[in-house]
Length: 293
Image (cartoon, rainbow, N blue to C red; front, side, top):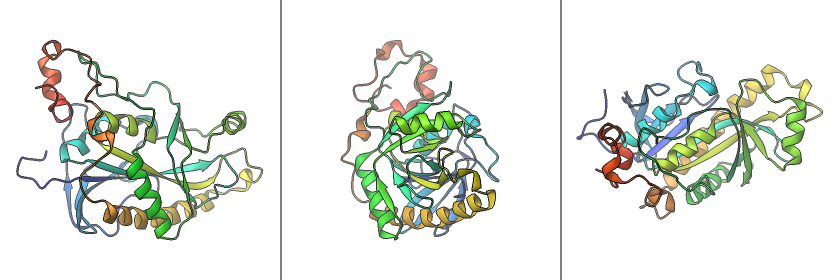
């Protein structure tokens, strides 16, 4: 079912990536199915209480990890969080390292993206409504600081800032591509987070990610000796660390938002209200309702 007017507002969302399919500390669990104008999210949102706060958790790749990065319905996933009332979104994703100093099991909290995806839908707008949000700083600064501090608090090695290359996948990089990204000064590489960040910004949701290093990308001389068993072991360890760090971050989130994420659409909508189709207004009401009715 979709959330009703009497439902408890959930202000913090969590997206779990490869290896992170649940939050162990979550209590009072309830599955919530959210209908969206963009189709189905990756699965039901698991709501509950974490460190005294109401949260909603979504496994990015669905139950059993069955959805490819290119198949993810990013719009439905983020729209569902918006409908639930989420204002801050913590995500986690497995990445490859493009620098020697980012070792397997380290966590990087990036502050920039470089887009290498191909044709993914990454906006709620269109269908008679045009908006252009600012994206120079794609991650929420205050939320990223909380995330990084939380990683350090649980004893993991954290790197603050850096560029996440979002490739298309599902294949990994060629050696030539990996070397090129390194020559550009990129830091880590993954397949999922850019569209989430763009859509979260349009939805005026604060967004950050824990980039969980599983191994070095193929540029590294030891890359060919990396086994599937080793990667799975690193995924499992990373997931445990991420659960602790995210729970700590949730406990540190307090008070109203003071960042610019909360007003990202204030000067972004270009179309005059009287020219926006009624159906588009209805469907996007959770996002645009405070600007266009």
